[in-house]
Image 1 (cartoon, rainbow, N blue to C red):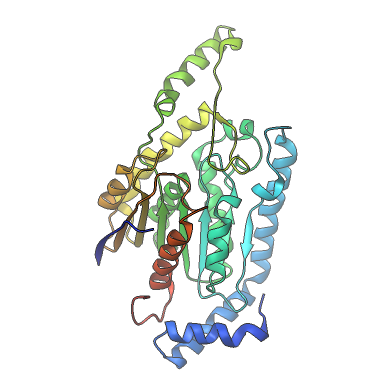
Image 2: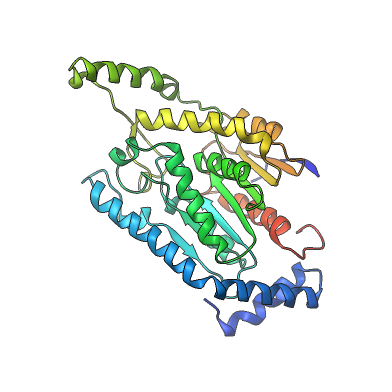
Length: 342
């Protein structure tokens, strides 16, 4: 199946189990035996791996608290609730698990609304915190994209303790990391969705970053540190989430991530959804078509939404994005789905 779609419009709770199971029965095509077998498998998987999940999750939380305390900068660091990773469990054993990945200079809160939407539809959801994010710009300046990837990998490992069916969804640079993981971990990732993921940026300062970084290094070698240009001002759509300063070394790392992602795309063989804003002021919309065309899988969908902003996972019109992501994962992650989700 190779589809291109253009859209220009905008713990266990017994009391709620019956409603959830009825919804899952509908998704399974009315196959009660298959549903109950899957339900039992998910429940036993969850309990068998509970201790490992708790240990991995505790480590992720402790790492954030330590990083935040070490890097905290008055007037630059956001509230810790912005940067803290989150794990959302549905009221009944999860249908499947989705790992959400936020964008560059952002934090888990950026994808929390999407996470709530998916959790309410019986998916387990984990919002990872990329290393160097949710703390302070100086912390981000010292990171490499492989450290961001390691954060995603740990998120996948945590979700694998919850369910055997794991999907990835990334926004902006988080989409690149999700694609990279899908290419490297083919048998562990069943489906991957991206929203406004970049292979090309519109920002001219980003294009100049490698040259500026080289000049900075030269200035440092000859003792002219005071002339270094280490950060550029950032004016994000969500200033309560994103950093107000963008480290140029981080921009260079982001560009390296985009190149690595582009090189890895032919290796992707899982289901793929690519969502892009038509007039994105940050990511060049051509990125979406390039991701779609270069991805090795034949099971892929491209959705172009008529939007004139980058952060389409929040604010007006975001529910259309949420619904597209939900329908994609409902189709690709539900083991007993008999028909496309309508």
